[in-house]
Length: 304
Image (cartoon, rainbow, N blue to C red; front, side):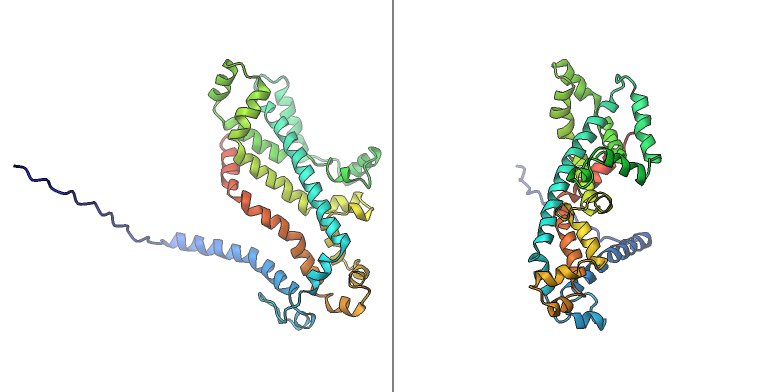
């Protein structure tokens, strides 16, 4: 009789990871670059929470000294600053939405060989990357269109990025042609193929470009500096620009009930607190779409 032998489980021993010298050097370089980007932000955050005497004496490095939150209280109690925050959020959302729609509607047709004049449109799009009319012609154009001192002057100019369009066009080109051919056989038109097949397969690239547009608009202030005079239409970054330039000293005293003593006490921490206030919203959004970066940009560069 044959005896049933119990099969012993195969135990796979994991080999300890051996770090090579190139890997160690590369890791140290990446760590150094990361610290170079992170530590200044940590220093600004620590400064915003420190007292004036500690800041002026140079005691603040990467940890708050003599904790003082009056700068943040002054910012959040300022109606103008909060109004600029929500205005910037609205402008960023509308601009990003319009920009993505235009980018998609330009990138997708340029992937079709049957499009009449495709090479001409490609050339005209690339031409704008190398040549521009300059600041003065753009300003005169916006003035003639009646967009000066209007929120639309922050949305319409520069709404389409040729660089982002090329990335999305390359991503669309990398998609298998068999998917569209099968949909065409089933009777789908170009808009149905775009909405039901191409866009759902391009979420990584779309999320990446959405973040590019949103971050670019959130951080911009030069367009508002040129085109906007009404304070109600000033975005947050322009408020921060004026604050750093020292033009908001009167507003600081007013937001604390006209107390010049309090304004003087927080004058050294109000600028870093405003920087954190303006940067934090986009930092909160960033981690939710960061995972799309590698897939979106790398896959979009496969063809083109």
